[in-house]
Structures are given as C-alpha cells and as structure tokens.
Amino acid sequence: STMAAPSTEIFHATATAPVNIAVIKYWGKASTKLNTPTNSSLSVTLSQDDLRTITTASCSPSFESDALWLNGAAHDVSNARSQACFAELRALRKAKEDKDQSLPPLSTYKLHLISENNFPTAAGLASSAAGFAAFVRAIADLYELDESPTELSRIARQGSGSACRSLFGGFVAWEKGSRNDGYDSVAVQVAPESHWPTIRAAILVISDAKKGVSSTSGMQATVATSTLFPNRANTVVPARMDAMKKAIAEKDFESFADLTMADSNSFHAVCLDTIPPIFYMNDASRAAIRVVEEINRCAGKKVAAYTFDAGPNAVIYYDESNQDIVLGALRKGTADVPGWTEKQPHITACLPEGFNEAVLAPLSGNVSRVILTGVGSGPLKVPKQQALIDEQGNPRP
Ligand code: DP6
Image (tube, rainbow, N blue to C red):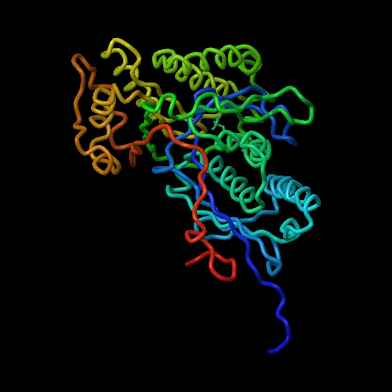
C-alpha cells in the first residue's frame, strides 16, 4: 500500500525492582482510599540477584488498551490500585509535555507492561512490593520523569503499601506522614546497602496447603477488631522505629535482632487478637522460631533474627560474621532441600555445643527450599536490548 501507515512507533524502558522484608511491620491502614498506614515501618531491601521483578513499560499510539502480563499471563489492570498508579504517572508526564511541546505525547498513549519474577510468585515472598515498585520505576523511566525515589514512592504506595519501600536499596523507612491527603506518607532511605553490607537473610520457604487471609483484608480486620492493636500502632511501633534506626546507624546486630523478633511477634499477636483470629504462622514457622532462639542461646548472644510476614515463610537475618553457626544449624534442620548447595556448598550441617536437637524435628520435611540472600540495591535500569517486548509490543516469547 502507498497510503501512509499510522505511526506504530513503540517507546519502551525496562527496570528491575527488589523485594523488601520488613523488620518493623506495616499492618493497618489509616485510609484505605489513600493506602496510608496506621504506623511507620522499616525494611531491608534484599538482593536482586535472588529476588526481583523485571518490568518493561511500553507505550504506543497503536496500543488499544492498558495491559499487563506477569510471567506470560495477562493480568487485569482495571483495579483501583493500578489505575491510581497509571493516573499519577501520566499526570507527571503530561506536566512535562505541557512545558516542552517538542516531547512526544506519551501521556496520551496506552501502556503495555510486561513483568517477570525470578522467583515463584506464589511462594508468598512479597511479590506485590517488587511488582508495583518495578511498575512505577519502569513507567517513570519510560516517561523520563525527574521525580526522586521518595516522590515515586508516594505513587507505588497506592499500588501496594510495602511497594513504596522497594524504591530504595539498603535500609528503608516508610514514614506514615501526618497530612490528610497522604502526601507525606513516603519512603526514605535510612542507610544504603554499603553502610552494612554484611547483613544476610536465609529464607525458609515453608509449604502452605491453604491460602491464608490477604494482607489487605487481614489488616483491615485487625484495625476494626483488635483491642491490642491501638497500643501497637500508637505506642510500641513509634518507639521501635527510633530504636531500630539507632541499631542500624550503629550496626548493632543484637539490638537489630531483638527489635526484629519482637516486632514480628507483636504483629502476629495482633493477628491472633483479631476477631475472627488470623493465623499466618504454622507449626513449621514456630519450629523455625525455636531453632533461632536455640542458636542464640548456644551462641550466648543474638546472632540470628526471625521475622514472618502474612504467610508461614521464615526470613532469618544474620551478620556474615556469624554465618557458620547460623547456617550450620539451619542446614541441619532442613537437610538437603534445594538452595543450599547452589549458594553455600561449603556450609555443612553442624550444631553448636549443647544445642537441643529436639527443636529441629518439626522443621524437617516442612521446608521446600531455602533462599540465601542478603541486603541489596534499589531498582536498576536495564539496557534497551534486554526489553521483554516483541515488535508489536507484546510479551517476547
Ligand atoms: C505483613 O503491602 O501487601 O508484609 O498495602 O494492602 O497492598 P497492601 O498491603 P501489603 O502488606 C504488607 C504487610 C506485611 C508487612 C510489611 O511488609 O511491612
């Protein structure tokens, strides 16, 4: 045909974003509309070598609707959370285009987002945090936005609260803010990964037969019914936030561990205090707690710290200097599940002097894999050649 074809140019940018695991938990919404929290929270960003989402954000005048694919499967983007993120990012791009008429009008084009996780999405490993962080970071890069990670965290927060903390590497606080419009409910970096690079995490993936209560509905039930909850949100957590920032500044692992374990237990206590009660930990999760307590007792100091999110998996933080005692005991308890030999072939199962072996029994057989990782960086840009799209703007096979 000699007729001029409509422009089918595809604009795209690709970014990766990390998973984060909180040591002071977000649990409770002040506003469900703004997705603001009842209390501040603090997390460690985990290495993207082991856990990350990669997202290509693309737009074109030829695209007919906004669309998202995750690991090859189409996902709905009509939900309010995705729509809020799209609207805010488009508004920022529109403001840029209004200032500079020479820019292509990307804000008027439909978006195709193509995402892949390098870990099993269903394993309950904070995939929504990495997912929405990569979503926001990739579109911001596509739109060439100048907004800082903190400003972008305000947008990611509306996708999923914990996602706002995945805009940074290292140690990250989500400050709850005090404004009615949620404007100051954003993430800030407490310390970069280079400040305390020896922080490691062993994740015990614990099989879960039935799918538990989602965090979104669970936390709303807790806010509505738990009488322990106001004390946690208003008194316990604010003091812990200050103490945790100090522990991180001083690289004081023992305080970091005490606060991490106490806050995980406080979060699961308000879940139990919810009507009807919510259980995220199971027998194997509680066995992991006993194993860590036993490691610490034998070491004569806190060398490991457990924490659990809205599921049974145990995340165990430790400092590299104590790797042998912590991993030796965990390996003894989990035997030859996948994950050990690939990452730590030289770690052999071994228990410290006086270790009560009985605590290991309920763990063995209930861990399906171990993920050995550590503190890591924030979102990264990916070269254009590695984009996940084909010529038509669909997922590359
Ligand atoms: C237990 O961020 O998944 O992992 O804002 O409703 O999407 P929504 O909740 P979400 O909740 C995470 C809760 C947690 C604790 C934490 O990550 O701080």
